Image 1 (cartoon, rainbow, N blue to C red):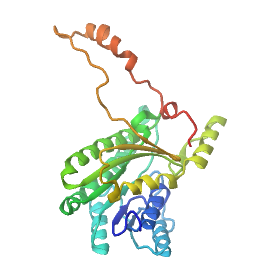
Image 2 (image 1 turned 90 degrees about the vertical axis):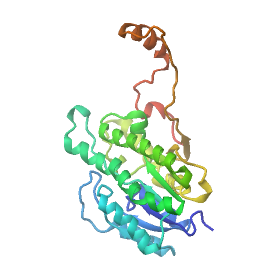
Image 3 (image 1 turned 90 degrees about the horizontal axis):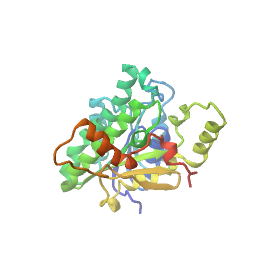
Image 4 (image 1 turned 60 degrees about the horizontal axis):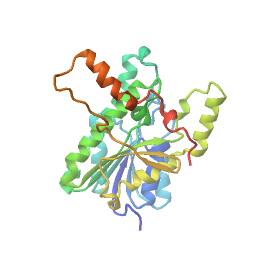
Length: 305
């Protein structure tokens, strides 16, 4: 008996990396899988090399599972609807969406051009909206459904050169939270995973010195895509029906529940504030609790388990 026996799961970006591992594990756990992938490069350009999504579907079939391939882009609203319709037409159901599809176009913000900003927002933030919007009413009508969305520590904490990616990924956090709140009465759940894993996207990190070379080596050995799949698949199943509206970080064999914005400290001034008193009193008193400008590596500064 698998965690997903009798369920149908749509996995986006499922030809490689985290998406591939999620699709394979979902099938091993008993799900019928819609294997979605555009077959594009890390930047979102069409590579036109083979049919990697079909390869994953064939692998699922070889293990005795059922899968169907979809080649639409998550950034295309009509394409997202077609993914959901394919699941309903082929397998007569849809119970969960795992959505790790993504691209990278890294650039320092003062050099960011419109095309790179728009492309990343379209695939990540709009892509999550498109797929969730296509599935939400079906989930509500059947009073069952789980969205597993993907954010990044680039948004939650920050990394240089990823303003477009970070903005999109934080938008996904807000989207997931509202879907979880609005869906609670209908047993529709939504959670977010921020993964650490060696994928094609991480492979774009430039290796400039010995320190960065060691960091890349650690990614390859200790933070693999297959380690992200178990919590993603677990969130799809009925055993996790009590889990919704949460943010998880997965790094190697570690799973972290991340905090969400809540007040840390407050101050009131009965006579009102002036710019001077804000600086001299409020900011001065609150400064010990300010969040520093350290990047992800400064927060997760120990080796993965």
